[in-house]
Image 1 (cartoon, rainbow, N blue to C red):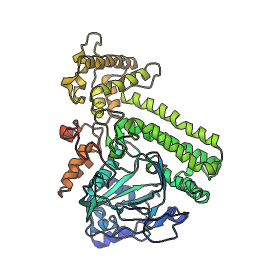
Image 2: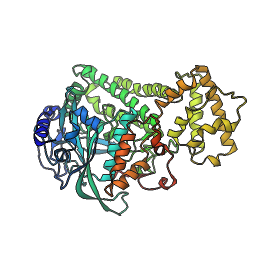
Image 3: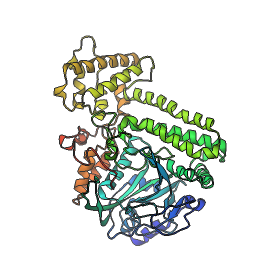
Length: 538
């Protein structure tokens, strides 16, 4: 790509910064950490880095934004998406928000290591906020440096794109850029700080507005700014609701409850554990946001959390996520109550969350099991017995559901012995040779009930397998896979990042050449840092 083509393409990009144009700004222009009042954002420029170089970009995201692959591979792209160069029309800023962290009100938080470059309007007239994570300090950085390291940035880039292809609502990742700087991090907060390579992810979404974006103004008794933010959000992100008023605020809240329920169903479907479901990490658009100490269920355990900070409480464990989402929605409801002034109507809207989640979750489980629909007379017991069965021996969740599709429903369940019934599932168990006779009996009893239920539906084996394999992925971003890619990247080899990125674009396809990536977690990864537990350190 010659310089003229490059300049022409860059000149054609259009930024329409509705957020900064419409909402009140911080009156100060200095970066030092401080409390910011009556403002939704602070203008701040990214920190210049010494040697930006592109590791990987998403061609799909680039295409959505109207960026060519040729431009993405240019030096200019690395300069722009490291924060070294601003384009005309960009309006870099960090947003102000608060939040409950691990159930406790934390006050002002804000974009401490993220800087929004501006809202790019693409060829379909869609607005996409471009945000650099790890681009230096802002007024919201508190005691931190605002930077990010390679290991956390690799995980953010890969997981946001993997989640998208799994069909889970999420922010997207455009690029991962190495900065050329070394960043000091104490990975497990145990006094063993070390220098790590610095990196920046450019992530994008229609909006990064969070539950905590509204909480901060309610906590400060600032209904004026609260109303401005909510009106802006409805007008720009929920225009179908109409002109903002008290009734529309209620409709908006109900819609946020609905999209949050849908998000939780997706997380539970694929075995994703966010790890840090603070209210400042919850998107009002129902997107997965802020990939920090996340993980994937491998041995099925509803009480598992990947977050070292949550090791004692297990507040954000896999099985707790739907309840925590409801708790977080209640905090959002409290924040907007001053604008609605009708607590019973707000409570009624909030009550739609558990109702929606229950209904969608039941259908999701029916889909995972290849059933035509949820039958309350039989299926609740079937589901409950399945969860109990998955916990009695260490069972890989992803592999279990994928192998379950291979069960032959035409067998004579009265004549089939235990070994024949469970043989198709053995790959899902971490220690199949140690399954006790009682355990094998419990598994086979459930399988008999399951096969009988399937026979009542009347689907053929092939029809059911196709149905199940469309919702149960073969490939997920297991933590150890990310760690292998990180280890190689820290030695300058980025091939595994590219390989995982390509593989995870088709997580439901067989892709036999990648079978090794669908295997159970190896023993060496069971307790290794980055493969089992992670911290919020970035």
